[in-house]
Image (cartoon, rainbow, N blue to C red; front, side):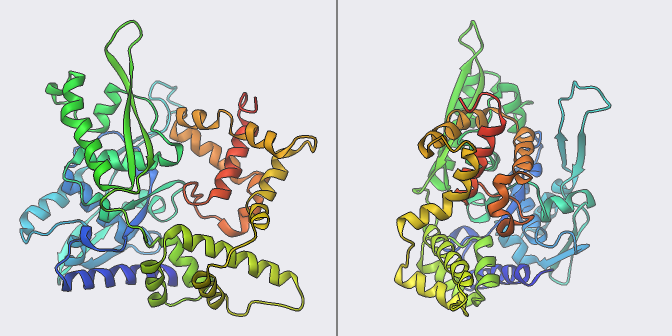
Length: 437
């Protein structure tokens, strides 16, 4: 396990110990705890996990996801596990039954259309979690081998806050929150048929929901209300009727950032940011904790970009060098040092725009218009597998070169990195017929 992984785990446990002293549930702490959960474990067919099972699953994966490939058996204090899973009761008989439900639940992944030729169809059915036992005040468990890489090195993932997901009192809200979070960067979920949506929400066996207005009143609207009230995303329902009738045949959810959610932190601690500050800038956990409590996430990231740029510029000059990046970063943070507007634009856009232009006769305005025209709509309409194929192609393209050293083999996060997102949109514009206009 890397030093950064150990430090992040240590910080999470410190938050638990502090919360335990003050009898605070995970939903009540003022610092975020979450995990980058593989989309392969989110975009699955419906399962019968109740709300507690879904919470416990995230607790298992939070403990295991940073070292799933290196560690055969994972362990954690049982009280810590319960806190991560939002389980405050001392009734361990019920807890054990909930864990057994998680063990018995299967992830069913249909990678290709189920009606394709059997020689090309890709399908998997995997247990969410392996062996589990309690001893010595700890919980010990294993992760199925076929899932370990998905946990530690997912090709695509969604950041899930345990603070937020544990706050939902409806399994429909919890399930829909995870699904919509995975599509946040696209701005909307795909169009789901009513049958697909009921499979996703595990309501196919409930005949009382056969009528859409009942499904909306009992399942959809309460889930929307909880998500919009509590979480970091704001969703709205859109529907389509079956051609030639008024009956609703399809639905989707548009997704926006929600700064007014009750559990949204104005100064969240992000795991990847923690690694950057710890590894690149050699700041201590206490310094990082202080930063997260006093500065907004976007502000912190802007000073990271500023510091990196200044370091790069200094290295190009034989007479100057920034010996202590962490001190320089803290100075930039406290004094709000910024790049000149023109320099900032050049840093974020130069490589993207130049590669995108190709033909030097085009103007930047024309290139920007062409790159964005139709992309948003197109990305909303494709499947997760088609999106992943685009991401893989982007990673292998020249457009990714300016970010290759910084991102490396890490999953590409389009939500958090605006420059990478702009380059990805340029790749889509250049490689999807009809989008260049």
